[in-house]
Structures are given as C-alpha cells and as structure tokens.
Length: 327
Figure (cartoon, helix red, strand yellow):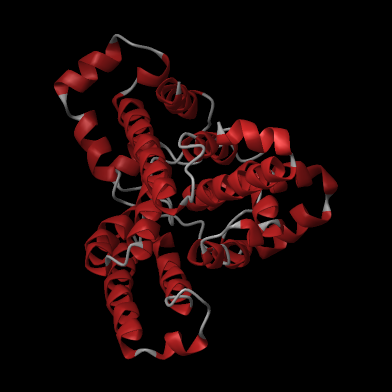
C-alpha cells in the first residue's frame, strides 16, 4: 500500500501543482534566480527533452506523462520519496527500542509530503529539485547520525548543486557533536576535528554557490528578503491554516513532546526546526510550505518515535492492553 501511495503522490505532484518557474526554461538555464541556481535537475530535464524515445512516449500519454519534463519530474519524485521512506524505515529499526511500527515513518513521510508539496491554499507550485532535496538532506542526517563523515563529504557537492539548504547540515553536525557522548556537553564543541569538518563542508559549499551565482548572473532574479510579506501572513488569520500546515501540522506536536524521544541525539536534532524557520522567515515565503520540505524525513522519524513511546505508555498504564501487547 505504501508503494501505491507513493505512485499516487508522484502523479498528484505533477498534476495538481502550478508553475512559478517553467521547466523548459529551467532546463535551458534561463529561469529566474534563485530557482535556476538549484541546477542539478537541469541536466536530466535537458536530456529528456532531446531523447527521441522519451519524446515519443510523452506524445502518446496525458496527465503526469504528457511531456518529457513531467516524466522526469514524476519519476524522480517517486524514487526520491521511496528512497527517503526506505531510509527512514532503516533508521527507525536502528533507534526504536521495540520496533513496534516499522511502517510508520514511511506512512508519516507520505502524509508530510502531501501537505508540504501538494495541499496548499496559496503558492501551490512545482519545483523539480524538491523531492531530490528531501532525499539528499535525509541521507545527510543519517550519515551524520552514523558518523560517516567522509560519505557525507562525497554527498555534499551533489546535494548542494540541487539546493543550497545543505548548509543546514552544518548546524546538525554541531548538534550531533554537542551530545556525542550520550549527554549534552558544551566542551564537545571545542574539538578541533569538529571545526575541521565544518571548514571542509564550507570549502565545498561556498565555491559552488559562487559558481552558481556567477554562471546565472544575467538571469532575472527573485532574490531578496521576504520578511515584510511574512509579517503580513503571520498577522492575518486567514493565512494561519496554511502556515501551520507545514509538515502536516506535526512540528508543534514534536516540539511539545520532544522529551518523549528516547534517543538523545535525535531529540537534540529537533532544534534544527526553529533554526530553519528563522532563516526561512527572511529568505522564504512561509505560506509556501515546500521550503520546509527537507525537514520531512527527520520530522517523520521523530514523530514515529513519539507516537510509539506514547502508545507504549498508554499500554503500560492499562493492564489489559499491556497483556495484549505481551501476547
């Protein structure tokens, strides 16, 4: 059922969204910044537009398959979502004490993805790099959690070419080091090796961003602060349902029950949520909940951990339920 739901999501993603950028212009490298600067998906789109087999296939189909660009975007969306879901299930198996709900992280990810990328009252747009970004960022979190820094270093340039939000993996690296010994300790942040890692990540991220902005310097741009419009959104109640719908309304749930996350490292990672919100308050448009999309993997995982812990607590308080669970 999760596989069918993933296919349904991918088809809805390209069928029920509008366009702020046009895929053919993006593939040609002439779309407005900063969207064009997220250039990784430009290459498969360009390939599809000039591939005779893909063009013929699209000519005989409608809906999610009616153009070569949409074939690529829907396919990448499907595989990005599925890969993220399978990775979350693997992480859940690593961190869950009893593994009561092995399907739950993937199911929550689907719910979160629908709210972040499709179910919008305002700003309901498709961007080809969104689902790859979700996967790359979740993979980056897993590499940090499993302390595989050199693999993270290999992932970082590819993921940064897809979207610059990979820079948020740096504070996650700091949060991980903060509780490296199993409990929070400020002295862990003073280790020279940690700052050497951060310097290496910046040494990759900054040249890529400089290259991107130089390459597309003549493109039109939407770059700039969105603080004024975000203040308008926050002060007008008609926008509140959309604002709070990010992550399927789960961020406040997670922050309220954060102490129910038994894994201290995952619990500490949750501080990335308010940090992301503050940064996006300046750079993004808050009603466009897809700007929080990369957090979907972590949000699904910690939500599953909280739900599992709460249900176990209820079962422990109810002898009949506890007996049923033991059987």
